[in-house]
Image (cartoon, rainbow, N blue to C red):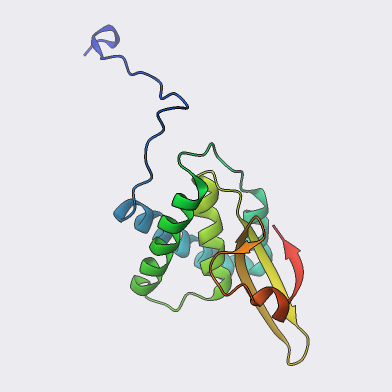
Length: 147
């Protein structure tokens, strides 16, 4: 078919943004991110995951952040149920942040430590609100990095 015969597509204006679809597409995206961050952590360690998240850019938003966050959180929980390995906090949080940034939400990966007994933990935040854990985690762990 010649190029001139192809139907022309209209650009989507800011007023008519496509809705975020909960379900299969977000589940697939999150599952692929879990695989990606699992592989990255195995090959490059924590520093590889950290560098990758720090380099992610936020895309143009498609829907209100609250809607996107809820849909992606449900997809993360569902993908972790189907994932063949136990997804640790770093992997879950990195996948959540990655997919949220791809949907235009300015989410951050937060790394915290507890000194005695020594523990480390990762969670996702957006505008100071913890997304995938209890809000109390910010008082239990001392934040050492945000990316």
